[in-house]
Structure formats: structure tokens, C-alpha cells
Amino acid sequence: MTPFRLNDKVALVTGAGSGIGRAIAELLAAQGAAVWVVDRDPSGGQATVDAIRAAGGAADFATADVADEASVQALASRVPALHILVNNAGVGHVGNLLQTGASDLDRLYSVNVRGAFNCCKTFVPAMLERGTGSVISLASIGGIVAVRDRLAYTTTKFAVVGLTKAMALDHSHTGVRFNCICPGRVETPFVQARIAEYPDPKQAYRDMASTQLTGRMVRPDEVAAAALYLAADESAMVTGSTLMIDGGWSAGK
Image 1 (cartoon, rainbow, N blue to C red):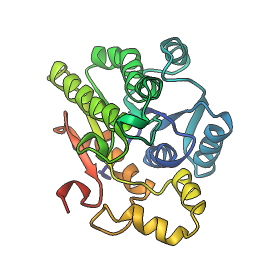
Image 2: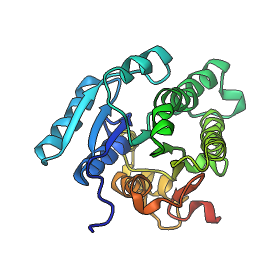
Image 3: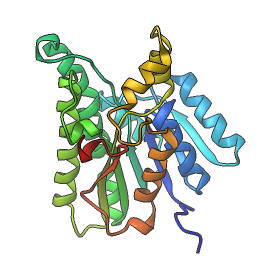
């Protein structure tokens, strides 16, 4: 049997209109899953769907705000029972304690933590009833070690790791698995655009990549490969795990 195939499985990926989410959605579809692409940006989400269909895969688009419980519940009324849920939608903020307001922390918490919670609360019960499913949440290197000047972001990503472990423990022996991926700095279109704004983009890239022992940023497709592993039956014994895709960042300097 060909490994890591997802035939006859339905997956939902939030924040799939670009970057990591798009790479995950495209790879899951390429391996046979019918993928629901979810994003607040209709143009980005539809572009992901179009790319999947052009490659011969199955995909549909739905817009939703994961921070809004009612929006996620409305989404569930359109989506069939899931085998794979990928909580990828997230936002960031730059700032230390003195530069971070309560509103900043609330905004990140609402998307990064409540968003994952809302999706799990809505879609996991059906997985538990069927006794099968894989829930994959995108945390960050900032969920394992503190990242300088990212107080709000680090706080919420530590929470995503904790949420994942708590669900894995509470729902062990059910057939539903809960894991998270902790990438280092990823070279997404958003990051590339920010780098291009620097006077010396090449130096800016080197500075950002220097925290990773490999000397480069992570590619979105490398994170997608980790998601595929966690989604597939081959990872049946993996739950409550944090899979590091960080170029050695967490090993130390």
C-alpha cells in the first residue's frame, strides 16, 4: 500500500488562503483527501481551491471567522463529517510587555487559541462518536521557547501546545488523536513581503534565518509534510505530540 494516502478522507484546513495553510491543503488533497479550504479572504481561499482542482484534487471553499463561535458552527452545517481538522489560522504581533496592550493580547488569543478551541468544540464530537480522527494545530517555536519581542504571540502559542496536550490526555483511547506542529520562521508570502521592505532584503533574510541552525527559513511545503504525516494512519501511535520543524532553533545556540 502506498504510504500516507488519505483516500476517502475529508479534511478541513483553516487559514488556507495562503502560506502554510495553502501548502497543507494542497498536499492533503494531492494525497487523496477531499479538502475544505477555510479562510476569511475569499480570493485567497478560492485560489487555493482552484490550484487543488487544477492538479486533479477535490476541494471546496468556505469563509469563516474562527474567532467567532457562531461562524464556525455555521461552517459545520455545510461541511460533512471530518477525518482531519487542521487548525492553522493565526495572527501575530511584535512587542514586549511595555509595547503590548491588552487589546493586542485579546486579539491574538481570540484567533490563535479561541479559534482552535471553537473548531475543536464544533468538529471533534463527531470524530469521537465515530472513534477516529486527527486534529492538527499549528503552534510555533514560540510555543516551546520564548521569542524575543513576541510576548502576546508566545503566550498564545504556549496555550495552543497546552490545549493540544490536554485534549490528547482527556480523549485518549478514543481513536481521535491531537497533535501540534511547531515551526520556526517560515518563508511565507507574507514574510517575503516584509523582507522586501527592508533596505537590504538579503541581510534581513539572513538576520531572520540566523536563529535556525540550518541557516535558512522553513519552507511551507516542509510544514505541510509534517501535517501529512500526522493526518495519515501511519502516525496512529502519535498523540499529544509537538512536532518541531524549526531548523534546530529549539536545540539552542
